[in-house]
Amino acid sequence: MTVPSRERQERRPHVAAASGFFGRISTWRLRLLAVLSLIGPGIITANADNDAGGISTYSVAGAQYGYSLLWVLALITISLAVTQEMGARTGAATGKGLAALIRERYGVKWTAFAMICTLVANLATTVAEFAGIAAAGELFGLPRWISVPIAALIVWLLVVKWSFRSVEKVFLALSAVYLAYPLSGLMVGPPWGQVFHEVVTPTFRMDAAYLLLFIATVGTTITPWGQFFIQAYVVDKGIGPREYATTRIDVLFGALITNIVSFFIIIATASTLYVRGIGITDAAQAAMALEPLAGPMAHYLFAVGLANASLLAASILPLATSYTVCEAFGWEAGVGRSWREAPAFHTLYAFAIAFGALVALIPDLPLFPVMILSQDVNGILLSVVLVFAIRIASDRRIMGRHTNGRFGNAVAWITTAALIALSMFLVGISLVQIAGVQIG
Image (cartoon, rainbow, N blue to C red):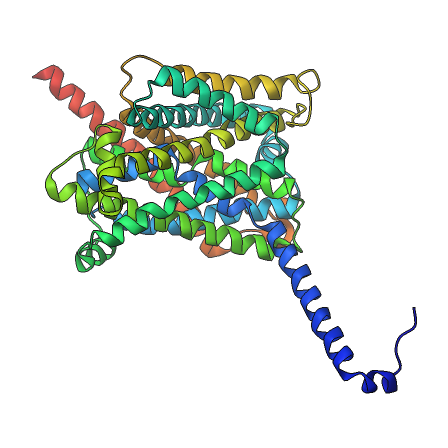
């Protein structure tokens, strides 16, 4: 094909202009497609944190303590952004998941220890997701022995029978349901002066109930499975150091968005329930926080949101658990592989779903306390995962020039140390209370 001469172009200025315009459009579209192809790890991982355990924990925090835990959430937003970025950067720099790097750097024994902690935390959270599905079903008058098995089957089919790209689109679409809380929080008209004061003026209480909720708030925001998942996701998408700049924006944006939603869950429940002295023991009470937006339909809106959030995380968690454990021990993994080709992967995946569903089916199981307790397990075991993740991300032999900076390291280590200290305080206070009961 010949290129038109300059004279010919000058005779047809409209054609030359059109060619330049469409050329610019084409370049813009290519750049946009390149950016969109890298979006997902940060937004999906962060939004999956606002699952059944997250919604229940933040709701109870607002209903029980008003706005006084907002300062914790403000600090956790920074910690979440730093730790998620650290995991994504490690994946981009090494092309390996966190479990594989733990095995290479620390050997099989430490890997087994890390996997046991991760498995316990992930199974506890999976139970919370199916408890959330059960609670949502009951708001619609559907008994848990119907809603939970149906959800378990949907989750298994969603991941095993659909393509990964299709599942990714479903995950992103489900994130839109979280808009209900910011809308409700704005409509209720909270005292913004008091809200701001609580954010910038930390308060702390040394009692077991407060510490449990404090640890649960951290554990539901920064999760052990999230560290493994985001790194594996970056590796799976083939993101390397050259493409990482876009992914970094995605990760930081995801951390910000998810905690804006978390802020408004606390604000909505504090403004509607705490001020009226209403605590939360079940989903029906938690749904009252959406009454400013939905009125008498609040129960149904909350049920839909809780079900969607639970399904989102229930689809990711068993999958992340299977990939993590298989990667740690070098076993074959992948939804595209048959049961015969990857027996450990499919067994772990099926076990995680079955375990979460069966526990949630226990008659008269208190669903909201179970969801919050699972986040305490997350928070206590998170420190183990973070120690491995920080040390690997700080190792120049592994990361090259992509190691942690001073600020990121400081935030990550302070978060880890705080979790360890809080866990020790909780154990100590619990022992003192038990001793006091026995003496009395």
